[in-house]
Length: 391
Image 1 (tube, rainbow, N blue to C red):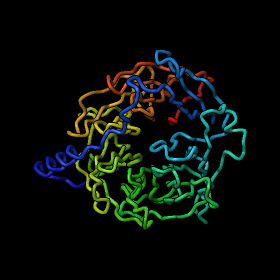
Image 2 (cartoon, one colour):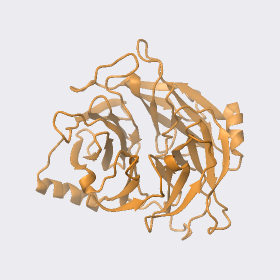
Image 3 (tube, rainbow, N blue to C red):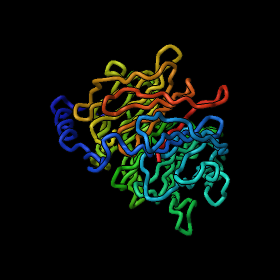
């Protein structure tokens, strides 16, 4: 960890505050949104649910309109950072593959899985002498023409062609080994050493960052040169323990890293060649129990920190003020909600969060920062909603 003196930290916060990401909501966006959001939910039984509401009536609630068997395996983290310019959406799976589907808003969801021309499976565990299956964490570039993937147990960062008009569509174009850190874990027949465990790309598409669950590090890659340009070693909150970073989200100025030690590391990534940690957020700062992931609000003012909770502590979303890097508020979730993923509506006015323990999806109004609806899913017993992606 890079420990900054108070004066330096104040300067960094001033820089972050003065250069906040500009709002992305168009000037002609209707005041109540366009009601046309289609929300895809990946479920633990491999199915996909579609949540929507009547586009002609903003007062009607969201509902589960369709659910189809999609044959997914452990597809808990679909690539939802950018929509891009294609109709394809992607998700890493735990069986050593990445899956892509062409989603057409006007078609029934069943056609997406029935038409073999509208899906692709990429085998990402192809390194000789290494595990032949394991988890993948994929992220698309802002234009959605490339997919970058962390193949965790083979210790690789991979570039996959995601352009459906390309002759190499669905093929691995680049394979970058994650450099070993001084604290890399010992690999086994099933587990890697560095274990890259997520993927987030800067809004300009120039850099990617991924946390290394087994390496105690965050690794930065320059996309143009396809080279690792920095690797930051994180210090544990408690000496002689491990941080275990496993999720990361960036807005191009900071990166929020979820750690299994129960904290968030806040990194200054304005210079990707020299990553710096500027703050470690804990429960004393307002972080919930069992941090899972985070999402930056489209207006650039906040980040929503999603915590799963525990059998005795409710899940919660902590609202991080990006100007001060403090948590002024927590958003209370429906009873029994154990979230770990979320995505925003197209106009940024709603945030959709999975409630695994409640078989529902909570809808949050981003202006009031309150839950305005809890959408029930008609799932079988022991089947839970997992990933969230809005189209």
